[in-house]
Structures are given as structure tokens and as C-alpha cells.
Amino acid sequence: MEQVSTAVPRELAKIISEGLKHGLSEDQIVKGMVSLGNFAEKVSSPDNPEEVFIKALWNEATNEEKEMISRIIFRVGKKRPH
Image 1 (cartoon, one colour):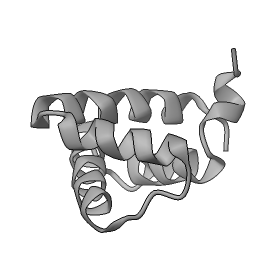
Image 2 (tube, helix red, strand yellow):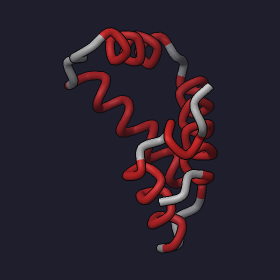
Image 3 (cartoon, helix red, strand yellow):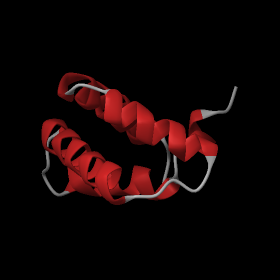
């Protein structure tokens, strides 16, 4: 199993850290992640099977599930050193 420190892109961990440092709450960051995911799902073209799967997963998820996915990504990203 891949370690958290290598599984999350450094850029994501840095963005989460910077958002928190500048006073954004976890809820604000998560809502932004959901909005970005919704936008990306509509305009992106997957380049590999993993991206096809992630796009299909996001497309099928309810708003509540999208928020849950984003909260998990937030928690993992918050743990990664940047």
C-alpha cells in the first residue's frame, strides 16, 4: 500500500495548507474542491483509465457523496508534508 506522503500530490497539500494559513475553514476548502470537481467533470477529457474512472465516479456521485470524497481528500492532503 502506498504511503500517504507519496499518494497525495505535493501541490494539493500545499494548497490546503495555504488555505488554512490564510483563514479558510475546512468547510470553505471542501466546498471549493466540490465546485472545482464539478467544473472539471464537465470540461475535462480523461487521458488514462484512472481518470476515466474518477470522472465516472464523480459523475455518479450525489452532492453529499462529492462532499464526502472532498473531505477525505482534504484530510489526506492535510497530513502530507509539503
